Image (cartoon, rainbow, N blue to C red; front, side, top):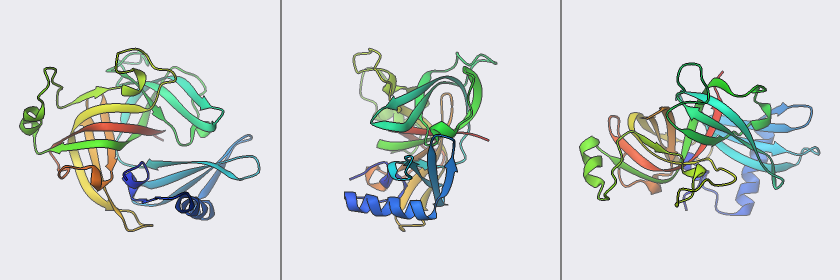
Length: 249
């Protein structure tokens, strides 16, 4: 079954396999500490990242994947979002894509993205303009050779442009605001670059596409089992995604 982990080539099926993966990340990763929290970043190569969360006894209490790609999105950061007591080191940021001028509370659309190193980021004063690298982990994904093929695929009365973005994590199907907001989105975009990447730890392949949509660029990663075809440069992709982002340095 496809998952956030399989989107970057980790085929984890059991709790034991997840524990073994976390143990290796713990041993080989780089530790980042503050006065109150600790993370371990394991980046074995090809953009693949796992972020472990540690409690005060240095025991692992959480693990999040990320993909470090080449996309850059200019955003207006407006709010920090702490998740829950059950997920004490998880956190997200509310943002506007491609803000107008220097006003961080305007832009193409609002959205939320999860941050794997949430308590390490330096955004003390919000709202603020920033640049982020945004990775989209596919839950559902379709590919099309060109704009014409994408347009022909749309049979509903409401049709979406080949560059469009719906912040699905902010609203319910009925249009009401959700609480708390989730880092989910439905978007369509043009493929700027694409390749099949081999996870250097597992030898398992996954799909990657640097994608241009309204508001900016996004690195899309996907388990090949999700695809109905190939992601090709110059083509169009569309799907439902979980968003993980890091501030660009």
